[in-house]
Structures are given as structure tokens and as C-alpha cells.
Image (cartoon, helix red, strand yellow):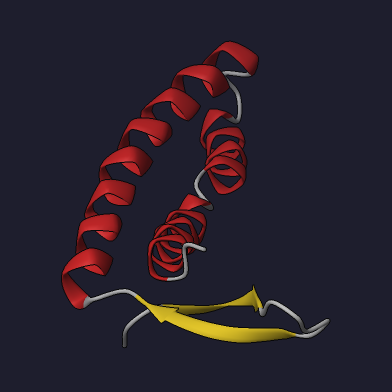
Length: 92
């Protein structure tokens, strides 16, 4: 399933926005997911290091909590790519 997001586009002379839906191609989505996977592995390593500094008793639980907080970027990156495409399509 391809990721998509809708953005409001202002129409000159109207006070209402038109919502335009922008979708990623399968290639774009796979590229973003792969980049996110690489970043998440890097983040998990950093989280483990940070957690061991905080508490060696429950480092895994602390690392997972840190990771959950930091790793929610996949959707953000997909939304950012959609916004980039939207801006290119509807440059005024």
C-alpha cells in the first residue's frame, strides 16, 4: 500500500482551500523505509549506549523506551517527502 497525505492548497480569489492528495511511489516509499531502518539501527545502538550510562540494571528497558521516543520518524519522513512533492507540483 502506497503512502499518501493530503495538503491544503490556497486558490487565488477564494477563502477556501482545496485539499490535494500526494502519494509516494513504491520506489520512494521503499527508499524512505530503508533509510529509516538504517537510522533506527544507528539510533538503537545510541540508545543502548545511553541506557548503559543511565542504568546498567535495566539497560534494555531504558534503551527500548529511548528508542520508541526517537524512532517514530518513518511517518515523519514519508510526510516530508509528500510535502516536498506537493510543493513542487503546486508552486505558485
